[in-house]
Image 1: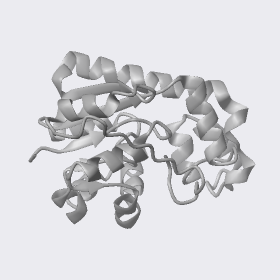
Image 2 (image 1 turned 45 degrees about the vertical axis):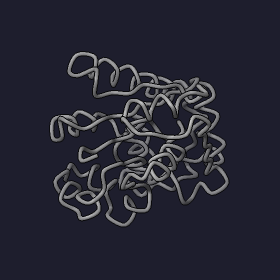
Image 3 (image 1 turned 30 degrees about the vertical axis):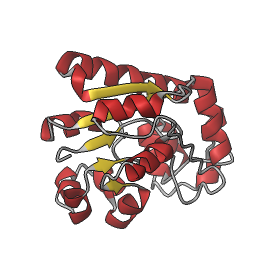
Length: 213
């Protein structure tokens, strides 16, 4: 498969399992390790997209999950830059998602505070608490802004579906994390053969410092 595949599901929606699926299916999978090594999340935040696209790991891999692919609006950049690519959006119950976010990080912000607040639209709080943007994660918590998190999560899913519905419905796979047939449906979408009983469930909650899922 020569075209690229991007998982644009928000963190804590099975992205780790999608990465495992990519690996099991024999795709040239790229996940959190490549993001961290290449500073892709920082490049996204700085708007330096070409630094991402010209990196060797991006050029040689063809299946991507984790940061920064699910960052706000980045799927639009990816779609226009790589119009033949496929995109994956897994969703889950909003309250379950929020609980997973809180439990994953012991209610602390996940990842770099400045980028986290940009993604979840808490910039005003971020700069008011520390105008020099040197905020300690523990000075803000997720549970104090639950409605905002749920709004951001639900809007991301709606916007992705609406965008591809208008542009190219065949480029987007939408599945529910709770659906037991999701992997078989995803394999069909990507024209990949997997066993009928294939299943996997990866969970990185026990090590929140190493992953942002």
